Length: 92
Image 1 (cartoon, rainbow, N blue to C red):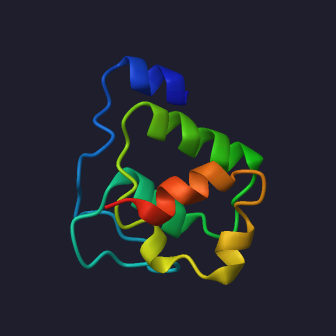
Image 2 (cartoon, rainbow, N blue to C red):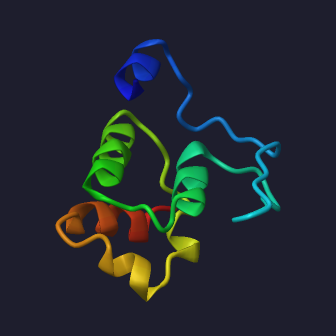
């Protein structure tokens, strides 16, 4: 599904103010798809999750602001994806 969306020209860095999930998080600023993914699925980070994130990053998705709300528990979930954590940590 992700590959299909990428092939169709999905703008990976399109920002939105219209995504709200009151159970998890309410955006207070323009938000990118990766910021939404990390915030809404913070308890479901698995190898599949990180593989999709890596695919999006490889396709040009911006990681800016993603690390801002990742705590030590979240950092530990990057085990096996250290290079992805480094990209996330150092993104604009």
